[in-house]
Image 1: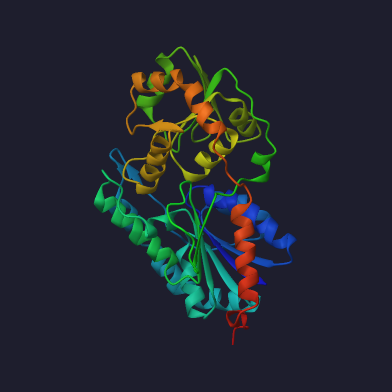
Image 2: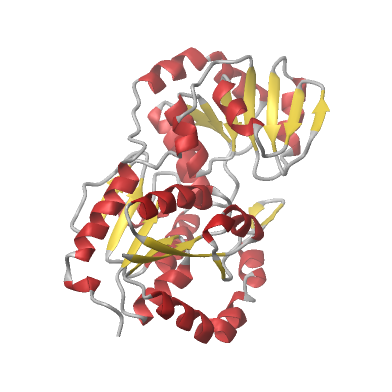
Length: 350
């Protein structure tokens, strides 16, 4: 089948997943056309010759995610698509799409409906469409996150919902799956070293100050900073990232879905520091605490981090009994594609 795959360029979680999915799709004989945005996403997917589009980026201020800045600074997306819709439509039609696949990328959703082709939405945010607001949740943040998800996934033929907890049973259109684990993570042989691995989406001076005060060694990845500062080694993304992840005794990080999935697969206790105002991060952090596989705090104290590190054997025992099927997501996707191939929805575009 000819698959148009729209990949969100906000962060790299969707991008790393897309690389795994595209390779598997091609190995099964499918053709894939990639649409994405953002320089890091375009560079990471370069080998697949992606088509550049525009997309939504999140913006933050001192209080967390800023809704006003996010709306205003993304307004240039509108004139981009008004100018380029005709060219993009011709390019997609020339590819002869049988199905569209979106990873939280709204243009792909719109194009699938305009061209009358089936859409598969594949994302962890889809879970928000199937749960009630968790107790203690900021209702406005929850509703905004749900609205954003609907804007990216409305009217999909199938929903593949990546989920840690799988809160609902599968239906005809909805499949709950374990998150995909990249082959390079599957090949790692985790060890328990003498350091804590930290990943920060953006600098967090109060947290970094706490780290400097502690009698612990930290390896920190944040905005490609490179520096040795006492007990902290700042490192840039590169060849050492995976070995540092595999060899740590614990993780302190923002609560993106992909890194939590990798930590569960590798059996690494996780202290989450969710980005303020971003419901998905808070939702993921709550899973860590409710499952007993980690802890979290938006503004962690030294005492909270020391308590977490003092309980590592407890978390390790729980993680030893937690299982993730690293290939369930891609196998489910391939099954849905076979179903579409055999249905009337697989007819050519006219």
